[in-house]
Length: 487
Image (cartoon, rainbow, N blue to C red; front, side, top):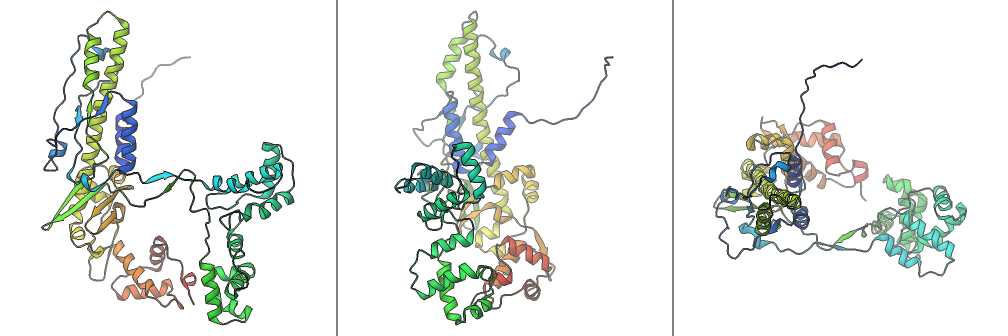
């Protein structure tokens, strides 16, 4: 039996415009530039305004985002009757010029590069082998990861060759092709099934008559576990050698690459490692001035031509085709208006956030000394700006600031706080710097244990538990004392 009843639900939904705005906020400068280009291509009602003069150049940060109002589009019939959602009024132009624009050029930092697969395939085609062996070699190359390693089991590859390529072969034949063809290709070490084999493939291509090279190869082949655990005394006793001999061998091993495919990428290679900062922070007469790098945000406006076309089509009230055309144009015009407003909201959000960060960390930006960094979490900036913590997180993600003391990754400015022996709150970043400094000055023959580091930092006024030391050490990518040992 059908029953009818009332049910009250409380829910929250994000409008598509809100979702798009959050995505725009999260983009860094280069991604933002790509997003603008894509939108310009997809929406013909959106265009870049031609600037004949710099009248729009603003002298203050408030002027940059001043609402100039919205020009209404007059029509003889109501095109909004075809639209289900009420569309608010938006600005029809966006001026994103800033004084810092001249400091950055628009050169592309990435270029198409040759992938490891293409590089190896070109070489394998130069070798005189049978057609079936060539297919097996190509399949092996296709199964290498980005570091150049073959992580899959040979048995699985044999099964795949039978099912997908129609090649019925044996494990021994595939191993033979791997070792005698693929692993002989450049770069040395490619096709290895593990770190030990990768290093051995490289060392074996060096001159074997050299004493240090021969010893290094021997250690890699027979004493790899002792080497990785840095049991140097065991190796010295095993080969009855002097400490200097082991140093020479270790020097040869250190020249080898654990990731021979690291110089290749499946899509692009970087030819310029310069970072394009999203913010520019200047210090003048004790004042810290934050600005946006708006080079990749051109001045946008709604197309006047499309407005005229809409007006023309709207005069014909009787033609259904003209009404549909007017609806399409109106939707494009509204989308363009919204997008311009979304960009302005993005810029305003970024500017308010960086302004709050600069105000909070003023001493750091003036001095450039990391000891001046105050403990700061996302909630601190959220409280100042009135934005949600998730919004602040999106703003600082993947973004950099150009400061008088160099390029700074915004997330590095955030840290928790601990209280020192004097009762002062200090940034955990400051403690990590002290920890890193202590470890850098330690005796590498007898590295400091975590317990010893606890004692040293306590003497400096930082009362920290051993597990906290271990956590900070791991965050700094510093290995345990045993693995920091050197001869």
